[in-house]
Image (cartoon, rainbow, N blue to C red; front, top):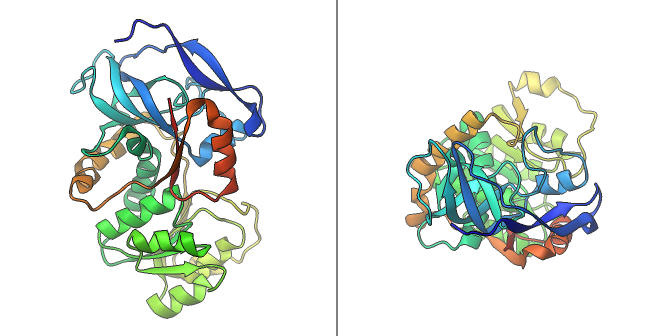
Length: 329
């Protein structure tokens, strides 16, 4: 373990735009009971980071005020009551904040070994999206083999993860995105049908070609909310995980009742630690082996050094990236 006591990190000087992200120095956190202290090699950037920076998604009580919900690196210290982990182990983990730093303390039950053959940068792109998609699409919505799964924003972080997992477990995947280069990524990842939403109406395509969707993942909101309901089969489960076009809409809810639809959503960070531990255990058992089998791959758009977090957030907000943006320490 390092004898250093201070670490580099990125702080939020005040709520606002990317310019409020400032390099800083802080004491290295300790590994508390049940935690691993990770020497961070890379940290993924996610939508909730942008929301927290703007002052719209405060850190939960007791969590670090630093941004960063997923990290990868090596175990620097093992907290009390932790079994199965040792100093020097390659690890990636779902953090409750604190990832934009050289060290981060993470609940050991929310950590996973870096899959064989993956770099720390690639592994840092996994935890947030894999925990999110597995918990919402598989555990809550119950996506199963043979079902028609509609994914909006297929070339983004959640979308690229979602397409691959759904295909690996036997679903028929319909993905939307635009322009053509983003649509091509969806096809490359295995989507059975890709819809460029500037050229085709996803409602017509899903209904005419597939008889409607049985599970829908939406990150768009706005006008998509009513259109998803139209695209849904009876008993469809619609999962809302973001609202790029807004969350306030006026819609007719009668079809929800008539088609027996389930409309749900969640934020992962506020879920109990015990729940996230269940998700982590399921990923280790059912999903992590698929990397070794070549059925899953990472999609990292680009990497930037930690001190360029401001630029990384600007890139994230431009929505021109494909897959994930990752910071390196």
